[in-house]
Length: 86
Image (cartoon, rainbow, N blue to C red):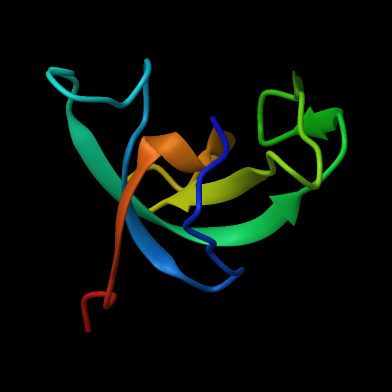
């Protein structure tokens, strides 16, 4: 399923850092900033794990506010865009 929500680099978001986000999912949430939008398969984030992305299903490289680490996530893991803490 392709997400209809589009995010941009610089957006501050709340997201599920592990597993699939969906109804009834009981995983914790965290926050971070989108630093890049990946639209082709390539190594991404601090781990260098391949992000299988395309124009239709991009991956969002998010820098975690708490750890400073970067990882790539599907749009379905992003719950909402928020204003960053000042």
